[in-house]
Image 1 (cartoon, rainbow, N blue to C red):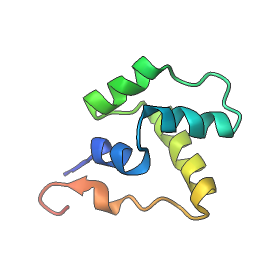
Image 2 (image 1 turned 30 degrees about the vertical axis):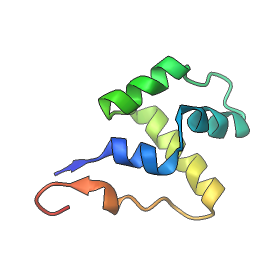
Image 3 (image 1 turned 90 degrees about the horizontal axis):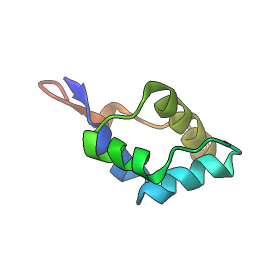
Image 4 (image 1 turned 90 degrees about the vertical axis):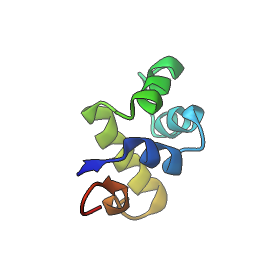
Length: 77
């Protein structure tokens, strides 16, 4: 089983600018560059520290924790 980061990113953010906008809205000063975020989409991987921050800010935006089970892929997902 594995987590589908690509699907998560595409579901949560319409484009790379959406990630930067969310982070800036919450006062993050050193927002990843467009090129770095593009690599997240291409590789299907987000550095753990950034992924945790995205989850926190998405929870604040949505008013509830982000549901992640639907992004599990594999024999049980």
